[in-house]
Length: 191
Image (cartoon, rainbow, N blue to C red):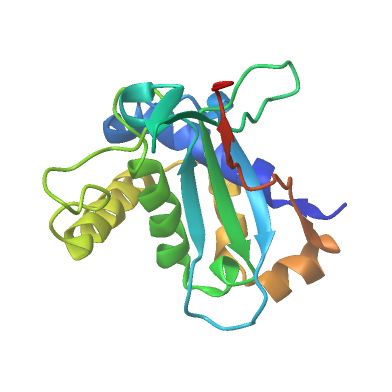
């Protein structure tokens, strides 16, 4: 069976949210984990992304240019709304060093609002996504990742991150994952 990357990351992040206080506000069952194929085999570029499925403060709608918009819904198998979509870009992400892969996953999780309401964690100032310094944001993400590892989680939860995309493909006869369409803004009013 091919490795289900999105399920492996879900299990990894579920453990992180139980062990690390900074991530304890996250309910991984309300986060959709997606798999995206990168077009070019280069090491630079987007490795993962987090898409909030609500607006500021968890609002389901937002008025823009006089019209009311909502975000296209993503649902789990039982019909419950996901609040976030975390996409992994492969093979790019998997071809990074182990610590960078782990830090990237934590980086995306750290974007999730402490209220876990479908909105992003908002920082003071005009650079509300990463705060005044993306370098500091990344250092904090790396620190959280190291704190999780220091708690000696089962190696089976993260061993897939010790391999490149090619190595994982060879070991598991392929790598697969769940795919989600990119959520779009939809008109929420009839006017």
